[in-house]
Image (cartoon, rainbow, N blue to C red; front, side, top):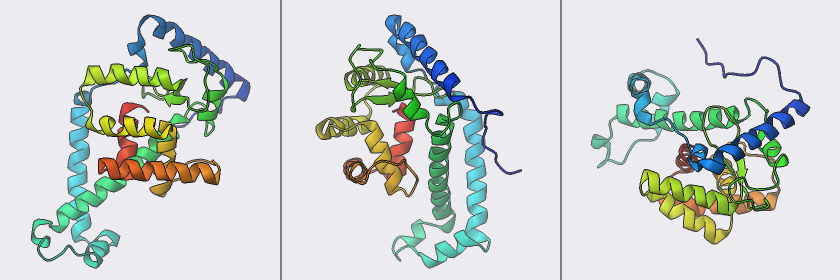
Length: 250
C-alpha cells in the first residue's frame, strides 16, 4: 500500500483560519503567562522505541535487498566504489543502509514541512505572522527578526516570537535538556550574522535541493551563505541541520 499524507477533508476558509490563529495566540498567551514550559512540550523518543525498532529493522532489510538486487541502488554502488583501502570496511549492505538513511531524512523533513500546513495550507507561516504584532513572552513588537517556534509537534502551527523571547525560551530548553553541542555552535553564529532560524532553514532547503519559498534572490543568497557556514562549523549536512532544527522545534 502506497503512503498517503494526512490531509483535511475540506479546506478551511481564510476568514476561519484567521479566527483560529487569533484564538491560538490568545490560548498560548494565557498559558505562557503562568508556565512558559507549555511552549516546549515533547514526547521523549523512548516512548516511540517499539516503532523506531520496527523502522530500523525495515531499513536494514531493505538496505540488504537494494544492495544485492539489480536496480538503481545496486548500479549506484557499482559506479561509485569506495577507495581500495576503505572498501573492505564498507560492505555494500552498509553503504546501501547509509543511502537509505539519507533518503529517509529528506523524506521526513519534507513531510514535516508539509504537515506544518495541515490546517492552514502552504501559507501557514505567513498567516501565523499576520495575526500577531507582539511577542507573547516579552511583549516586544515583532520585527523582521522574529522567529517561528513550534510549541508541540502535533500538527498545530508555530508561534511567532521575538528574537529575545525565542532566545529566552532556548535558554530554558538548554538548562532542561543539557548542553547541546550543535546549539553551542549554531546559536552564536545566528546571533553574529543577525539572522533567524527561518533563514537557516531556507538556506538548507535550497542547498539540499528542496523547495523553500518565494523569497528574493538576495534573501536566498544570504540564507545559503548562512547554511554553508552552519554546515562547515558543525560538520553536519544540510538535511542533518534541518533534522536538528525540527527536533528542537525551530
